[in-house]
Length: 311
Figure 1 (cartoon, rainbow, N blue to C red):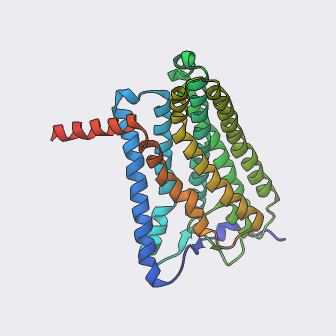
Figure 2 (tube, rainbow, N blue to C red):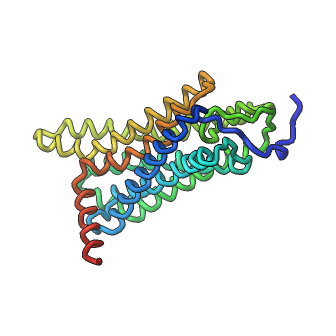
Figure 3 (tube, helix red, strand yellow):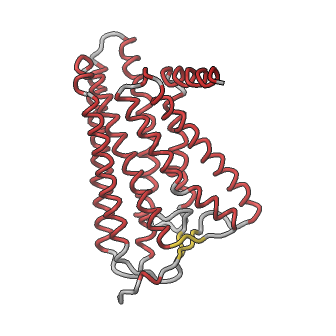
């Protein structure tokens, strides 16, 4: 097929949700409330881990990075959708779409890698408790997070640059409320073989690799915990992993399920399903890590008491 000139593309149309006017207000208020809850919840966790010296441990260092990424993760997509609803528009510029894809892939990758790093942290804490502080030293923790950033930046940059080689044919309509990589690729009228190969490779390597690490870590954790004789010891060990295991299950069940389904079946309307991993998962993470976590609760209580005393 003849290559077009993709520099002529000025904008895409984000079809998003229903066009019915009576639903627009409901959708706007729903996503605004979810966005605010997500930002405030994750911001509180970041503040708690930074201000409270009791939380200056590897586990909470990784958790604060995860919360930081979740704030930006949801901020990539939802504010643009809210703005479009407010001004009654469905457009996003070509440059804006590429920017959205780049940062979306960046923070999806960060969540993926950080969850794997947090699983390794729990593995060391439970399987090698006497050597935990030596192994998970500040230098290693910083290096692990830095490697997460480097790998996420490289893969998102490569995927985004590969889109520049594509040409598109009208209509430039995306059946979602944000620019999603798979849908952009399948919208192109030029050859997409290399883009498809790169996308599948990234899914297998960048998602399968961390997931394999999580499964390996928890298989070792389970075998170690089962060897503990006391019931109280088993319960305490499992409780330290419950929050992270819930977050891992939520992330992979929603993101991989929705993403692989859209690839295999080429769904034309994936906006409602995409909400699960783009909005719901970042919103629930603060609740998962705080509701059953006494350390986070105490840190937040001390933070608010300190702020109240300053006034």
